[in-house]
Length: 419
Image 1 (cartoon, helix red, strand yellow):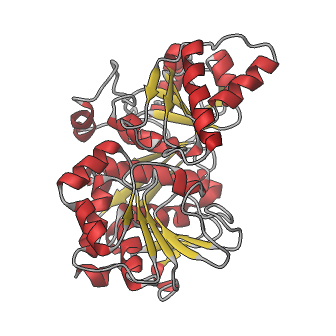
Image 2 (tube, rainbow, N blue to C red; image 1 turned 90 degrees about the vertical axis):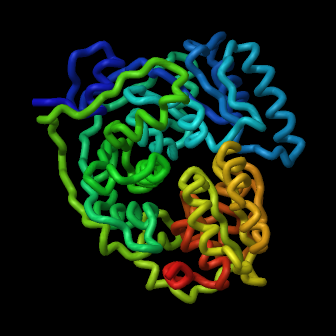
């Protein structure tokens, strides 16, 4: 029986010819990524149990994205200690402020993520790395184990294949597609699975769309997600790749636990209702819901394509006077390109507040919500208290839906702004 991409990658990184679902492995990761906030705390934990050095500091990458811009004294002191500790521990790979972006996108943009790689990341929202044919394994509080040993146990997952056919309607985006897929597949089928996206509609998608497709599926429990590398993949990495790489594809007789086929031609705009990102419903169920704020950004959006689409809605229009709309490009490169194209100017003329790349709004470090507030956002999660008050509501939707709601002052169908 043939092997899937995840089986092939895990086998190679574990020194085996093949592996099978259910096996427990301790593979060698090509890269381990962590953002700047927990480095000091994790090292203190390791020192407390007698660890004196990192196992593989040469393969670690620290990304500045969570406390950017620094807005508290505690954050300033932590950032200073992190930089000092990196020198002490021999961590040389660092994406610093000013050349930064949200880690799950900037690592692809700057050539750290490549086909065939096995990458572990401190953050569950790293599955978008599969857009380039890499296998990403999210860890959270187990990350100190990776720092101390260079590895962590991984159970070989079953792979489910999701084939997408057809073409999206005007006003429907890849975020609507993945919300629809999540609703149809459900957590029971996706939990601890590798999700392999394929089909003619996926082949037509850009790398940025594939990033959103892979990244959002984690919210129904997927262990990882991937798109088999193709000519678009190779074109994207041609001038970016920092390391040698190997394109890994599924064997023709690879076994998938389940195969789903979806025609995306008839998908309507979708929305994730509070209080969880898998609580997905058609947008029509909440049209007219008044909002207090809107947010376009995060690792699930903020790409140049997303900003272009949102700006198309906002051009020659004004954000509703009762709404605060925040726009956050995902990386500095995206910010620059959006400025060069006049997209940033469109947002400013519309009355949006635009800031540089940061994860901070997504977990409430800035732009917090008060009791009773309602927000619509392109971010990753909408659980209670995520962006401020526990007594506030967050709706998750596509960039065009968020932009349309910001203009109207209530959740609305974006297609009426695009016809």
